[in-house]
Length: 343
Ligand code: G3I
Image 1 (cartoon, protein in one colour):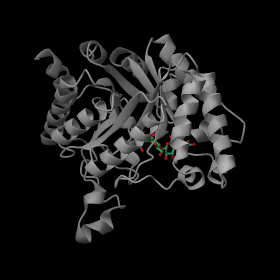
Image 2 (cartoon, helix red, strand yellow):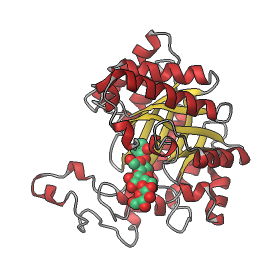
Image 3 (cartoon, protein in one colour):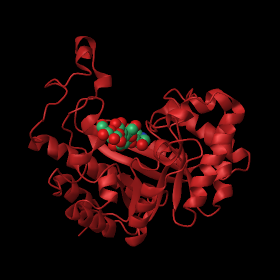
């Protein structure tokens, strides 16, 4: 059995690919990707700093390989991401006027979307533009152009490829204040008659939070806007969340102390079980709302290559995915498959 077959009638099952995976460096890893997933997202190589390192100079060498990998394997290909405040090329950070920024947005989006036109199925047009309190992030885009950059981004993407699905993607999407802010932002885009097809809820979640109810409330609320909901960037951290440390513990926040990295060698069975149960509950919820959910994408293939091993402290040993560092399925994998079979 495998993920993509078991969930075939519900939603796409995707993974993010790093450069080594796109370049097929490890055949065993590639076989695992081909066997389990029917959708891919580029973890880094389509971000602004890689695609337009210098003004007007585009480099599609990696993004073309990424697309070719998806086409060869008949996968649903998701582009990540056109407009994001992070991983910008240095020259982009120096833009100070409205005209220059409008020019950048137009040239960047039009060139990239046109280059991959007809080959990419959906794009994250804008990533992480809303703060946790629901206000708009004071990014270089907002500072120079005001709110209009959001509408412009979606308008330009739709103009460059009318057939590609256009998403807004963000984290903490279960937080009520942020949810209200995102809904307002999407409604503002829709009110102008501009196309927006979906909302991506990044699933960078923990063992205990957010609750299943909070996730469900958000899926339902976003779907009410008449857009598709994608669960993107799914991984469940089993390590303490440094942002929740109290009092004296705060000094350990950025230290690789035993407290911050409690399972350096292997994951205890009790936590392995918790992770499995958590993943099973989450997938049961996704299946309940499969009419709203277009795609569920993990942020990485296996625990060895997860970004969470380096965040927010380098050198932690996290266990967030369904496959372990030896690429073997974990208990969570089998529990996720079972949720479907026992329904
Ligand atoms: O490319 C350099 C390489 O030349 C150098 O040797 C190496 C040394 O550390 O760093 C490499 O760059 C790293 C890059 O990933 C590519 O591997 C950066 O240091 C590292 O910060 C960067 O991290 C990525 C992060 O976005 C950047 O913000 C993660 O891999 C990626 O998983 C993560 O993904 C984001 C999503 O795009 C948006 N949502 C949140 C998510 C997690 O932060």
